[in-house]
Length: 241
Image 1 (cartoon, rainbow, N blue to C red):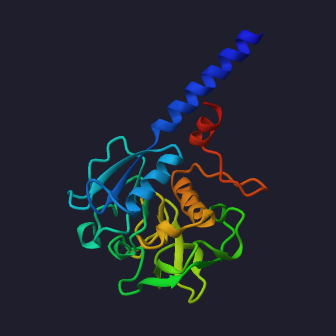
Image 2 (cartoon, one colour):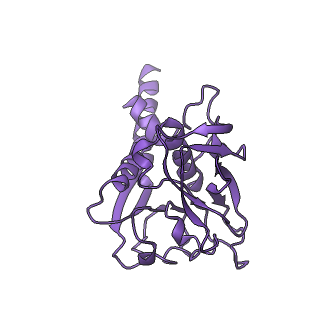
Image 3 (tube, rainbow, N blue to C red):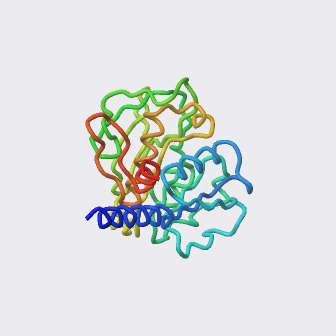
């Protein structure tokens, strides 16, 4: 019986290790090799157990996405180098760069902002919000926060800038409509991580980003009563290796 239990445990470890490495994310960075906030985001994604492949904004969009499970568009890049390159891809896209939202038919051009704040209002008790509610401090100091004055289509707003109500975190379900009434091929999310804000993020700020990525990949489970992050194959691997 002991041998059976040990063998089953070994199989679990093998399976969780394989699962952690099976999920691959492409990060569109400002440069190759990536630097600054792009590196911090890549390391955060790797900490969740994902394999991350960084590509420069200067490459042709979309980059090769065979075997890729999601795309993250960094904020430090120039939106003119990306435009609508990932609008129609059939895998989830998490964009931190607000200025591509109009190209993706998800936000109104001219309403993208760099708000000075470190507080967000949670306006939807979605699993992405975790155990957060009300006004939440997301960074150790006031800094630029990416926001949108008008999100479009079937957007679901999760958090807003506390000072002015601009959208800081929004999501779109697969099959919901974009601004043109066209169905969105896979989940989309907009997150607020300006390059100046990223180094200052606290656990609550990073947690909102983490859960946005996990939601996009359909790996999000509710947080426990203590408010820990959702369990992923990456965290299981870390705990039991």
